[in-house]
Length: 498
Image 1 (cartoon, rainbow, N blue to C red):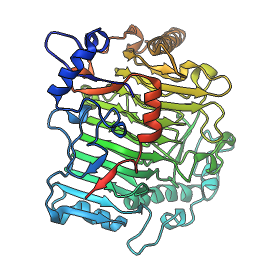
Image 2: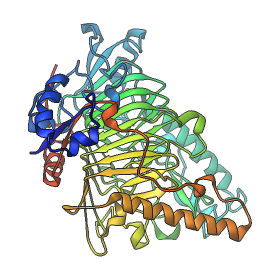
Image 3: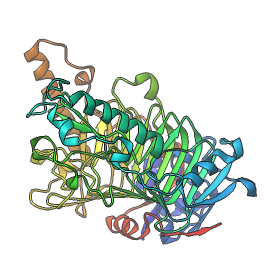
Image 4: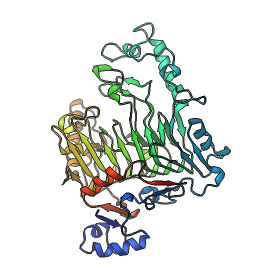
């Protein structure tokens, strides 16, 4: 398994080191100065995790989470602040930590915790949260084409509107789990983790999640927005989200829709199922210094969002520094991730999709669909490096790798499409220039000013290099990236030491 060590050394640029003839000789020196083993264990992959073992006091070894104060969660917590839990009530008590929620704490999850479970063990469903709510009645109040809501459409419409909101609020109170500062949450087994919970990291710092299986919550009260594009369902609950938090390390975690694909949801407008899931892992409102490593995200639509709006300059500009290292993305349909503002490093990830998957087909924009893996949004600065994309099925082509959503800065080094070298920068440039041309034409036709980004030129200079911020290893063949993703991502790969 070929890898190379990258770090900044005096007198030579990281690109010279990566590509120069003297790289092999320099690597030994650089590895020693960084204090890392020359050959990391295969299971450690591009983000070393301590020789194949998870320990509660581990710190993020690389990526943005390792910068500045670093990220070690509840490292050093005394014995009384170390917990093993298997119920939602037990988890919330552990996170409260004897009335000191921000003090260092370690929480081990033993088994599966259901976000819909009440303290007496009952599992709540739609009718428990809002007795009498009916999604079909709710939809009927928008009219046959789903264009306009009216309380007068049917006599039950006002009541259904109120029940949907009441149910949504009741569900939020039940399933939301907030991780406070200085917290480490570790799953003890391959299937230990959460189903139906909404994990929120709110205004916190120094949080670690490792070796966890997470099934996204099903929003029984998803809302229809007729003015969102051609109309869209907007679910409320992410599987994991961060709001205004910093120094987060998410490692060896599995995130998926699991047992409840949206293809089996109630049928909505246009004969299509309602979308009852929001994001798998969304980072918003100035979240900063995050590493997501060695994790598996699959079978989901709106996978990962960075930044929640182009207008959020005050919150997000200069923030959203995130590293995605050695992860496995499969059948995600979109947002792997979709980036606004952030300085984002996408390294050695394996992206897999198919145009003819039964439940989560990926139809690229080049085929007239909306699917993509990397989304370059407004003022984003993505540094992509040695990622492998395998995209198959009738009509599969390279535009699925990256789409521009008003983002004009994108850099890639050494990535592959179906095992062959590919020019991601050209794909990103083509997408941006097409969007810009459409925006300029629309502005001219309507007589309104074109958006500010339409005056920008595409560039591969993103204004930063991850080697200036932290040291890391990189696989240099698509086979190595693929092998790591298939064998060494998600929970159950590393032994947990308590």
